[in-house]
Amino acid sequence: MKFDNYYKVGGSLNANHRTYVSRKADAQIFQLLKAGEYCFVFNSRQMGKSSLRVQAIKKLRSIGIKCASIDLTILGGHVSPEKWYKGFANQLLTSFEIDDIDFNSWWLQHDSWTDVQRLNLLLESLVLNKLSANIIIFIDEIDTLLKTEFKDDFFALIRACYNQRAESPKYERLTFCLLGVATPSDLIQERERTPFNIGSSIELTGFSFVEAKDALIPGLADTAEYPEVVLQDVLHWTGGQPFLTQKLCSLIAQERTNGYLNVNELVEKYIINNWEAQDEPEHLRTIRDRLLRNEQKAGRLLGLYQQVLQSGEKVIVNSSQEQTELRLSGLVVKKDNFLKVYNPIYQAVYNQDWIEQELDKLRPYSEAINNWLNSQQEQSWLLQGKALDEALTWAVGKNLSNTDYEFLQESQKITTELQIEANHKLTEINQKLADANEIASQKLTETNKKAKQQLAKANKKAKYIIWIGGIVATILVFVGQNQLHTAKEATRLTQVGYNAEQQFQS
Image (cartoon, rainbow, N blue to C red):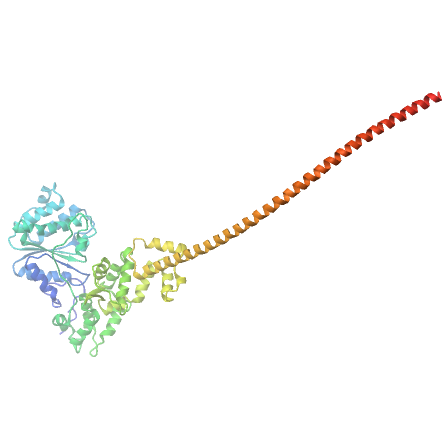
């Protein structure tokens, strides 16, 4: 007996597929929906949500419950609200096989109503009034709706249907089940509205050996001598992650070793080594892309994952946005109230080297922080000046890892300390300058005083000299005047004598 196509890798399994593994969630969702309880199955991709929906619908229909299944990816996320609501309403009627009305005419007849009002009227008049049985509407891939502007209105309508049970008994027959990669807080985010706080959460876990053995072992019988042991090895590597478990089992089924089969070698060869190229159908790349899709959050998610990955470090589960995002990526799971890496395959692919590589792509200061970490936090690698200013500007609005925040805080701290030290030195220099100015001022005062004293003496001496000079000048003038008189008299007498001599000669 050959089992070449025994396993199905990727996509949801049909209701009768032989490899479907029934888990605790299967019993939970069936019992809750049967009792009319709103449910939501929010988890990472490729965890078997859609296959769970298919199985639940099969069981619920078998007991007479009317079920409709709507995949929102078919409606698209880039259409007008009217087209989206019209497409949803049309799918709803088709799924319930309500075909006795002209839908397009009915929709146009109510074009004065809002889209939400038309859908609400359709639920009441065309679904609840026409179907007497209990009704369950499954809405899958709700994350495709989360980026639209009208999502709050749509999920508020679902919550309103739940609240209508208190006033209208027929709404007790209507139940919704939501599936996708989301959290309840993602559904209604307007602060003025009541949050989406109804329904029961269905938790999806990985396959256990007991759950998986009956469905998965038959496909290993031709290849493995001890298929039970092989399946245990498979579950060790995958952690029971549905997609990886199916993929690894399929790889093993294709190995015609006719002898000892080494699961470890197969994992290394076909999944871990050169994983980006071998990741078909895509799984590992999906996890990577979800982690890195938002640059504002990527650093924080990588930092949180690094904490989980590091040996011996335990991260307690909480309701923070970062932990929720990391868990929705599928990379980590809750175990014993701590976050753990989901399985050894993820741990080998998304290892410490990968984290550092991705962080280096995000950080403008990657070289500095790596050198700081490798040098046992040597202060010389901390950022200063313009580099620190640019790093702090880049960090605004981003959720960074604890290591990043520590590095930036230490950089600011050392900058502050250096500034304080520089200010202290400047104060000392200013004090020394002040002291020098004081001394210089004192010396200048003394010099001015001496100069004034010397000037006073000089002025006094000059006045004395001038006084003496005045007296001498006076005497000289007096003497000069006397000498001039004498000279004039002598001249006169000489002239008289000369005149007399002339007369005598005559």
